Image (cartoon, one colour):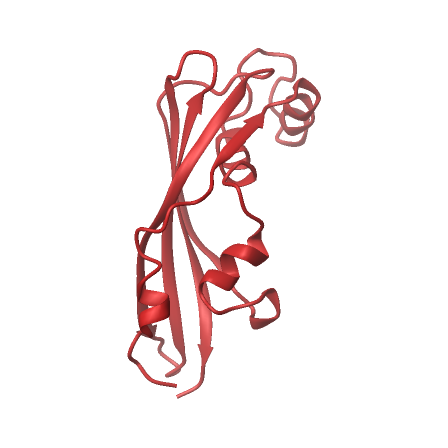
Length: 148
């Protein structure tokens, strides 16, 4: 496989997700708080809900996203890095609008001479009630592309 990034994959940079909405159901907020040893019942949901809401509301399934890059789950894509910037607390019972897209795609060669594509994407979370910016989530996926 070539070290050159195919045009069909390079062209995904800038592609927007369909987007959608996600409601932080109170029972899910309670379950996540309980699982993380947080105090269930507070109006503010655990900050992890920002990532859960963003990925659940991006408007496509993981298999669909993988297909944008000529891959399937069987190819072994891996979650890379993640960072969330919270601009205000995620609230239980609120609905959030999700938008975002592909920020960059680069082909790299690892230490063992294996090729992989590193795809970075960003998701924005806005409160559906007042439009306020709640969170920005940066993520990456590593797509293995084979040996040397």
